[in-house]
Amino acid sequence: MALLNDEIVKNVTEMLADLTDAVRLVVFTTKNGCEYCKEIVQLVQEVAALSPKLTAEVYDFDTMPDKAAAYNITMAPAIVIAGKRDYGLRYYGIPSGHEFSTLLYGIRRASEGKPDLDMPTLNYLNGLTQPVNIQVFVTPTCPYCPRAAILAYDMAVASDKVVANVVESMEFPELANHFEVMGVPLTVINQNSRVEGAAPPHMIVDAIKTALA
Image: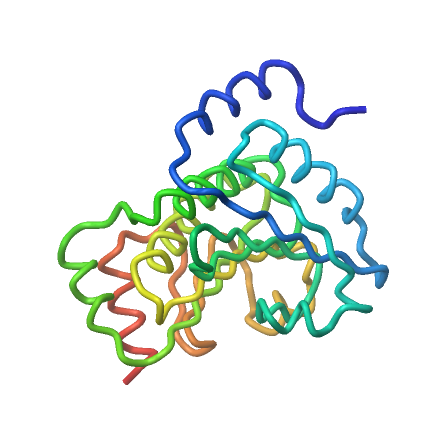
């Protein structure tokens, strides 16, 4: 049974109709307690079928460590959204509910290779000399989470120093507990700087500055 109904298929097809560059959706699954791996693979394959610019690849995280390492994937399930180059867009868990829009936006940004950010933010990101790891903890039922996730993706597209990892917190409870995620969205930068809520770009820039200080 298809996960996407006819109306969603129509809307997604229209949204993906003008993709610029090809995008690969690389899925890593695991047999180690992965409740939604089957659905994640099916969802990605159904989305990929809606555009000739999209392809889906599926790998086993446990039996193909070299492939996972090549994409710097350290846990599964995970989705790599890679365009003409790998911009560092990652989604950990199943992008369902409100987070389906995060997946679609990530596809568009990876295809276009151009972020939607204001000039001060772009100028700061272009001047980065140190690596920045942005983790955004989300849940499918959170209507504000895509804003935080999409901002992280934009920043990763803007700078090759930035990697954006969107994490479905209920699927990775140990990681969520480690960072004391009490509400979502929560953005954690380099594991030591935190921003709660769907913050504007300048607040994330300030958090990056704090993390790199």
